[in-house]
Length: 152
Image: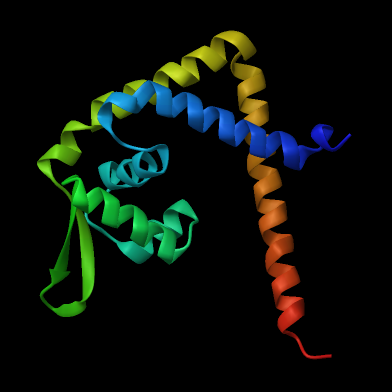
């Protein structure tokens, strides 16, 4: 019964799609979560750690750990802003730029497989339903935390 819930199926989908994507990009040495960070930087660079966390909807500590790993691998670098030394901006290195194509191809291959099997209409519907569910549940989580903070 529990396996038929949306929550179970959504987390299973997330695990399976990430594992499949990891298999497709394994030769790059980049994990899927790291690829998502790089994807944001390929769209707009440089970005602050806070902005990356906001765009990817993840915690500041999580993005910090991911950036630390990417920095250690020589894929990104954080540079302090001269006007405000407290602020560091994340930049892609040359190595980070070279990873764009293999990571993009891995994502496209996965998308093409799903499109062939499910069709564009069903993929669009599934994506829309997941986005709506995420928005609804994000709102209910915010409401629940707001209610917990409100004194009775």
